[in-house]
Length: 222
Image (cartoon, rainbow, N blue to C red):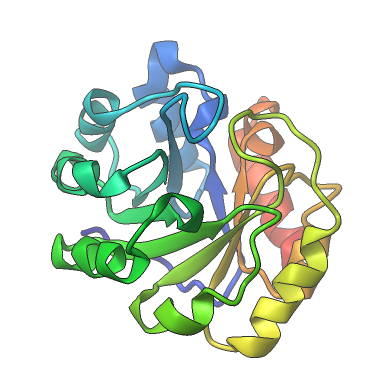
């Protein structure tokens, strides 16, 4: 498992969903040179979300060509069936959707037993109360700031007070946000208490990934 950076400071995690998959290895190298903190790898099954994306073979190939930590976000039903396969393929972190887990506590225990960091993701409408019962098994919480399934959506402002409430109730729990994060919106979740920012088009729409990443990190740190 590749060590993570200090998650109490602004961390930028480019979402590979927006990368050029024809040259994914080159994209990963550009992100490393651009000082990304880690890579966000979205897995969609067409059931939990209305879209399909990449899976285990792509992760295995990516792991061979990058030393950046890879955070695998499982937007899939019945994630328990594939935890071991994704861990073996090179995931450093496995993030599951609370809405997809019948026995969330057990699932998180399994993630850590496989040698990965454990994250749990909450959709925009999902209350935060579930965290009361699993926080000891978490390395961070992911707050979805769009409805998952597609890139390029707009940040949902109603999620900002949700982030602030998580920070108030769980002062030391790192908060990751994903959805509509760019230079115009990143200040909102940052001021509410998030420190880890997943950004797709906010990075990949720029010619110079390093400049885009540094701009996001600087704004988040203000």
